Image 1 (cartoon, rainbow, N blue to C red):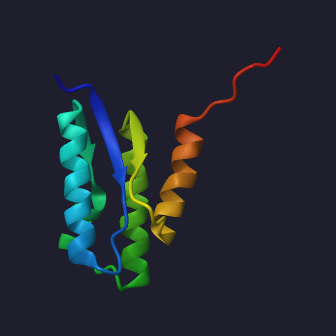
Image 2 (image 1 turned 90 degrees about the horizontal axis):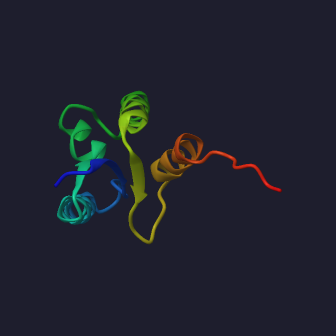
Length: 102
C-alpha cells in the first residue's frame, strides 16, 4: 500500500554513475517501505546540463517545487552536497513547524 510522496535527496555530482545507482537504491527502499519516491536528479539531467550554472539552478528550483507537493523528504547518504544543503534547508521550512511550549 502506497502511503505518500517521498522526496529523495542524495548526491548527484562527482561520481555520477555511482550516485545515480545509490539514488535508485534509496528509491527502491522507499518504495519497499510503502512510499512513492520522487527523485528529481534521476529525471532532470536527461534534459538539463548540470555543468551549466543556469540550468543547474533551474533543476534545483524545479526540484524544490516538487518537494512542496511531497509528504516528506529523505536526505540520503553520508555526504551532504551543495545541492542537498539547499534541499535540506527548504525541507526544514516545509516540514518543521514550531510547537507551543509550556
